Image (cartoon, rainbow, N blue to C red; front, side, top):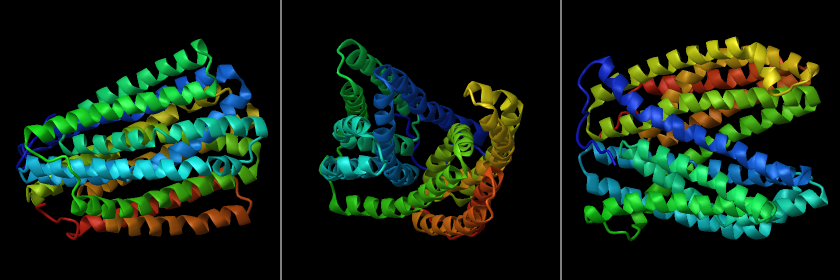
Length: 445
């Protein structure tokens, strides 16, 4: 558990910040991409059960993923709180806030399970699934909901370790956990023939063991430094308040992405298929950029906790440079790979034509996205959640008229991705305005 208490340990100069950014970002990227890669293995295993089971996994998985994604604030808010106290040289209080974050995650996880269990049939019905598919989806969803406390503990535990400037342990836990998930699913589904319930149980058990690993690391550190394991109401309440603001930000993001998918669906089968593939490409690239943002959360929280505004500004400038550079590299990679991407997904001629056109815009988005992701991470690390909530609302409002214009004018997929470009530019503007000010540079704990 690498911990760097008190002040900014890196000497002046861009190369020192580069080493710090890489130390945090590279393992974070590995942890981020581990989940989608192993989920593909789950789909491959469940696919052997037939189309209905695969569709049920898609429906139930979408519900669970949405619930977990809405709670990502548990990682972000905890990272900021812990990193500030590390910067101030108070490891004991950093662990104290980490324990409070874990209690908040456990409470929300239990609440989601209790509410979600009776609501499972209704949630599945929203997708308009057939009777056979719906029955399997409800089975998977109800079993999956039993694992929500563990899933949220994983988020909070990840946030604690990132705040402690440790992204290597989350990488190890993530790869091990999702590898175990794939193995258990294969055993339960293919060998024991438990059907889709076997896939759900394999995922739940893997999440429980991953949560146990995080708890073991954090609680061992807490005991070593004499930190009580009892929750503090004030600490849980503060984490919840910060989390609520980040929840608003996350909801804004999800609204834009869901509306974009809905608009593409109205255009036709080829358009929604091409949009779905383009979005998967965009998401994969986002993981690479988000790794730099995670480094930004940890470094910003630590330097502001140490009261070092100059180091915060210098590290931010360096990370913005990394964001721009990474965005340009990813844009060139998309352009280079563009002719072969439709073939990877076995797209027919109509889908391929739409996709090839849209991939130009996916590439053009990357330099802007590189800066947006970094600035978002820096402000999360600074604990500037309230502003991020307002910025999320404003950028969502900027997207709505652009999306409406696409619908009214019967614009195609290119027009839709131009509207998404408006959204990204709005995010860039709101974040850049804040970064240029001094309002977010609040030092100390």
